Length: 139
Image 1: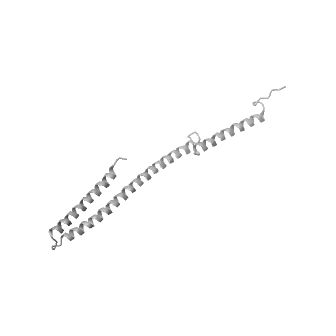
Image 2: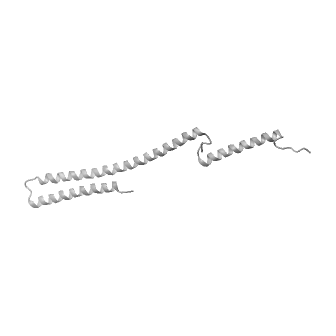
Image 3: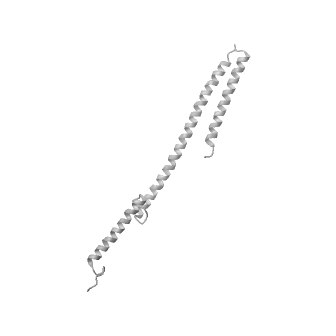
């Protein structure tokens, strides 16, 4: 009885080659599924892998820029809000100064306006200091 081996049986050799190719393709597909990437390593396709790595680095850089812009927007919003508050306080100071310029006011009224003026000035200083502290506090 003759013993047939894979090497001498042409049909079996073709089937073995097809099985090996199928296993290789299966491994490639499983790797793509596991990594989520079409080209998971330089071994898959060197040129495409290099391009993909460059694009991933670019995406990471853009994410960092986006985060920085978001922080900058927050800083500008806080500064704008503080600026509006200071502007309102300056308007009040102007009103107090105009009222104090009235020559018919007595000393008590003038002192009251001066106290209000000083209070508003202190409020502006406090607002500015708070905004600066918030801006430069370590995160």
